[in-house]
Amino acid sequence: MKFDWFLKGMIAAVVLAFVFPQPGAQGGFLHPEVLNKLGIALVFYLNGLSLSMASLRQGVSRWRVHVLIQTSTFLVFPLLGLGLMQVGQRWISPDVLLGYFYLCALPSTVSSSVALTVAARGNVPVALFNATLSALMGVVLTPLWMAWVMGHEGQPLDVWPVVVDLLMWVVLPLIVGQLSRPWLNQWAARHKGQIQVVDRLTILTLVYTSFSDSVQQGIWHQYGAGVLIQTLVVSCVLFFLIYQFMQFSARLMHLSEEDRIAAVLCGSKKTLASGVPMAHLIFGANPALGLILIPIMLYHPLQLAVGGLLSQRWASRR
Image 1 (cartoon, rainbow, N blue to C red):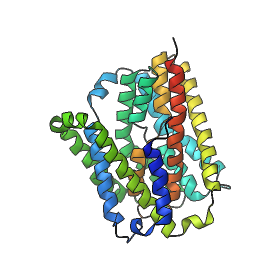
Image 2: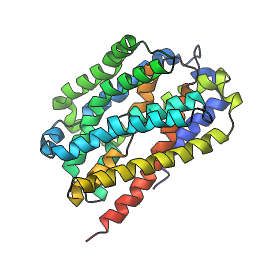
Image 3: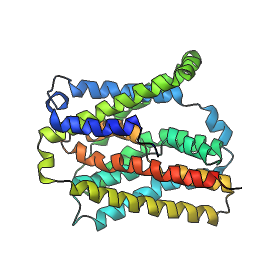
Image 4: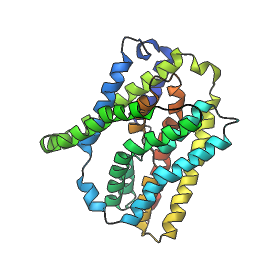
């Protein structure tokens, strides 16, 4: 529930982009075309350094929960996104609609899913397993979903350059981070707080460059504060629908209470930390990138707030 420095930093990065867009826009002195790629590589290297493959081995036996969580993340969520694109095409901007579907196609979070499951006294090995698995699967499934949808919307995405970029700037740093764990694991554990700060500052830099280009290109002139209110309302509805689906499915499958808690908290989350870097690779120099990122930037604090309330309620059970 805390309005922490990262959420404040997101607001500051957006405001800074509106006040001083030139440095972060294409051709600016920050050279975003280079800075963004290096920032993406750093984020995923740190992710690879932090991911423990031991968590995959610990939680692998609970296959019914895993199927439910990954189905929610990579099938039910995208189907809701497709439905929203059909229903909302008359009253929502096409770029924001694309941003909604991008939100729905993203993998789950890692740190917040696990932290909330711990706080709620849920099945922590299940949360660790699915958070790790989702992050790895998202590298492949998210761009495939986006290529399919953009092709049907008349905005064909040349998937092979995106795949090459993902391999170079996401998968390779992730692998290098994993390979360096034997030497740097203890150092990373001791400096976990500092590593998280570097990771978050890098993401805030990517947020700034994303919005700088949109402001510089004049994309925001046709939109007011209404787009933020509209996006927040739709995000609430989206969270409510997926929460109800997870609760109903978990009870239908007769999952234990600990498994159900982990399923709800993991299956309703979407990652901002990986979503912003991947958006730069998938959408490239699209001037509407700032609009496309609005849904995930509003869904992120919403899922933390509601997840925090739910974890408090579940933690107080007998």
